[in-house]
Amino acid sequence: MLNQPRIRFAEKGRIEGNDVYAAFGQSFGGRYLAVFFIYKPDTRTAIIISARDMSDKERKAYGRK
Image 1 (cartoon, rainbow, N blue to C red):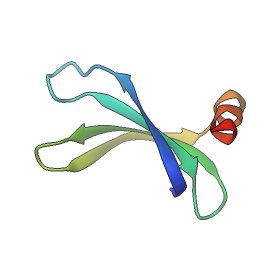
Image 2: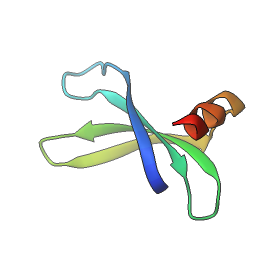
Image 3: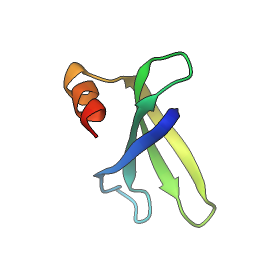
C-alpha cells in the first residue's frame, strides 16, 4: 500500500498472540484497499487473511486523516 497505510486493531484472536489487525491505504494502482492480517511479533511477520476494496464509509474516513 502506498502513502502511509492506517493500521488499527480489529479483534482479539482465538489463540493468544494471534490478534487481527486491519490496514487501510491506497495501492500503486490507485485502489483504496482494506487488508486484514495477523501480526506475529516474535518473527516480525504478518499473515494476510483477507483483502478487499474499502467501503465508501471507510474511504471517506481514510481521506479525513
